[in-house]
Image (cartoon, rainbow, N blue to C red):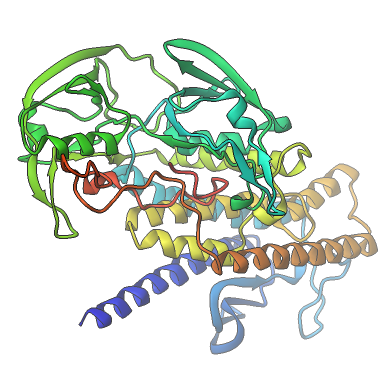
Length: 511
């Protein structure tokens, strides 16, 4: 029975990936089709999928196909070809289209992707996705003195010279972050001019630490940090009937001390609860006076006044975890429902796209084309995400659609942006671009993009053959006792297996 259920789960995930990945491309081409019909252009055919047709019918003088490979679709519009005399497949001459019509038809594809992304984004906004509470800082847990480069040689770690374990990082290159180390690591990877300046708090003093990130061989040579980080123990939610609810702990509370000891992270808290063996403990928490409960993804930092609260006689409850073992837990959920608005989701994709392009053309940065993801990598990430959360997978589909729209708006001859650009040039110079020049540009960019896609796909396939390096602190599977002192990884909800969206470089940036 278990094997059968596993097969059903794999099948369901695969159907999800094929449908939404394919539909994201289909809706793009469907936008072209509707715009072409509106502007009375000649449409040869519209295909769902690629390759050999499996089903074919003709309506409105258009051949509608269902093809063998269900990975999107295409619409054949001969009047968009770079020629002075467009013709049908049967050789019938067609009138040249106006530049405005070319712009409308070309822009319709990206517009439909944005519309579909906003449509799904409304569901994310209403129902939310489970994620970590916003965190404006993180604490460095450990820093290796050396690292191993791509040639297997030990090199001095530049981080070790300026940072120390226990440093609290609050800004990267003068910019604050609000999603903990995941966002901060992304900012380090994207750092312009290859230099990083961290604003840190060390022993109560504010300092700055600057260094040039080294290439991290574990992350394909990106400037990914070698140090590990821990999140501040911010409460995301409270389980009903739990010890935390009885003690009056609330969402957004920051747990700072247990029995007078500083709580470094969630693992430390869980460890101390196991050592107490259910005995009453005293907690010190910081509670923000003003918390916005409507949008937990607002990037504008609001200055919060924290109120210090001491809670005595808190008794953890012996609870059975999914692994069947018993642990003393407070019943705290370290995740919360995040509800980013559709516009905010679109803005995030635009910012990530800009940072990626800037990094690609910044010689001092370590980002290279091999770090991008093609269809294979996107499908792999979507499959991995849907294993953990349907809503998170839908948020990734939103990212795919927004990214597809932005990609196609690049002013390259074979993309929608190229058609828009050529139409604008035609309006300015009041004549069409010479056919020979347009054809050469189109074919040149076509083969260039095909080569780039094959190059990216090669690295996508290579990633499938190796495991993802882990960046989180590890714990033991046994409960802590006064004899062994070991601790589990934390409350079940404290573990966050959901990978970061691929728009973040890299996806494994979560501590």
